[in-house]
Amino acid sequence: MLPAFVTVSVTDCNDNAPKFSNTEYHIQVSENSVVGTRLVQVHAYDPDVGANGLVRYDIVSGNSKQHLTINSQSGVLAVNQSLDYEEDSKYTVTVRACDGSETSDECNVAFAVIYVTVLDENDNAPYFIDLSQALFEPSLRLVVLICPVLSPQAITSTPTQQL
Image 1 (cartoon, rainbow, N blue to C red):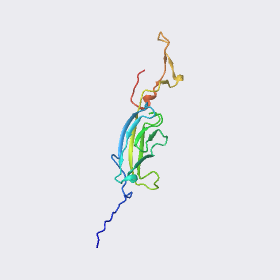
Image 2 (tube, rainbow, N blue to C red; image 1 turned 120 degrees about the horizontal axis):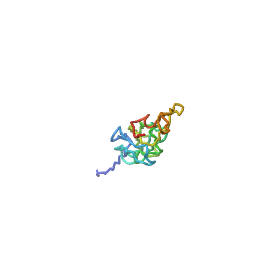
Image 3 (tube, rainbow, N blue to C red; image 1 turned 135 degrees about the vertical axis):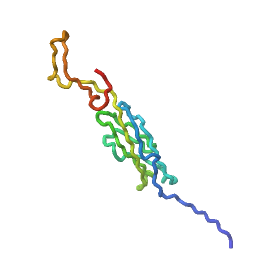
Image 4 (tube, rainbow, N blue to C red; image 1 turned 90 degrees about the vertical axis):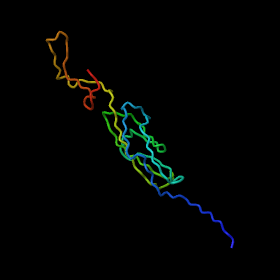
């Protein structure tokens, strides 16, 4: 009997889900940050080999106004539209990591949450609340109008200005 040599090739199947290095991220960003500002880079690892180990990222919730965007390949979360503290001061964004090739119909998934706190800047001018309640003080030598003045920042945050 002659010896036979057999070669067996094992093909990796997509049997592992990606795992995020962190499942929560806490970041702060100035409301004056320009479009394209990088906020954080998420990372998920998949031990599968080849296309089954490729990881893609997308935002699945917490971004209804599209203020943020994520690069599907690098996992970099960035500012997509101008931020406004007075409009939205916090975002809770859920990011999904999906493995396999882009042509694959099925993938294993993992999720991470990014808590984004928008920092207030002194970007709104004060304004008179109601001139009908203004008082004129005749005892003063100068003409002085006394009425309530409101700064928009005073409503939503700690004072960042003086009148």
